[in-house]
Length: 149
Image (spheres, rainbow, N blue to C red):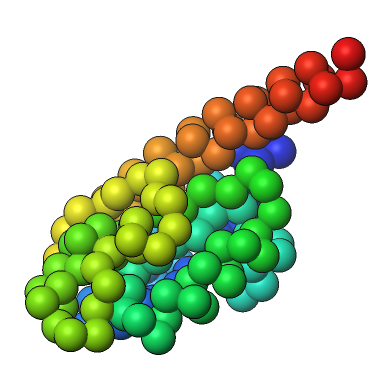
């Protein structure tokens, strides 16, 4: 079992939303759901994060911030879009200042639908994104091994 599977570090970014998904994400940290029992660590520094969780639609002002956060994360890195706003822009999509979902700005690996997305779905999405992270890490190690030959 890899070290990433035991202790993934998560960075949360809220684009522009009603904050419903953010409240549900915070509920995952409470004793009722206790996502930290899986070893998940919430960090505020993108240089320490393995997983980027995006909530809310991405507007034109926040697009560069999201790109910057993604660029600062070390490889391998994965992104999960939480909620309908982060996946497609949601009810904010027709607004003049909204670009759409997170995938309009950065690559997204896992989509977790819902409005607001339930804590159980967030935990399921995090487990799926950890699997994607493990696959990316294995490919990266294989590529490094082939380079050294």
